[in-house]
Length: 255
Image (cartoon, rainbow, N blue to C red):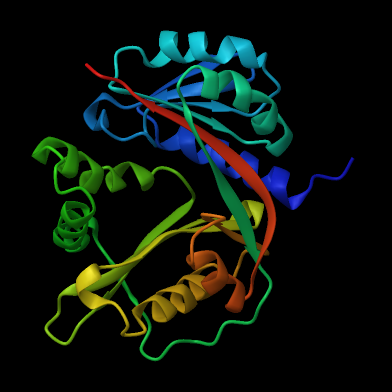
């Protein structure tokens, strides 16, 4: 059977998780990715499922794999499997959210001027500042890990670029990531964020258009959106169409 775009995207996400991880362990129907340097990052310490496991076995599997952490996260890269796993995981205390997969079919204009390609060091002050606004009670070590974890993403795909828009004083006000595997013809646009201090200036449009230019060699361009939040409509107006869902289950531990 032909491979669907959603299956290609699931394979890309599994590959990205594996490539950026410090430690990878295979488990039935998926893998565990770990990075002790960024223990606070759910993205870097989780169980990723790409098969059809026994839902009742997942809580115990997560405890075995992630029991040393202050969180548990299970990402399921198949909609039907995620739906089937939801009852057992929510009964075990997990919060269930869905990620809407949206693919691009529009024709982006070239922004003038475009967003800049920047180094992680250029982004860090803006990342830390926004994380502090989102998480005012978080420990400093958590904020630092969530800002610095971007370093690992450089390993995740053939081409990884960090984009930023600066204000008149040179301060980074908005940013995004672009991950491209040109050999596979697939690209992801991720973490399109405008700092609370720089909203309503058109920065996100500049970022998105620039990201699409960087991904123009790839026939399949996707991003992930919250199905119930306003960015979904914003992306739809700019040429993105929903094609499916992934499922994420999380549980914080009291340790």
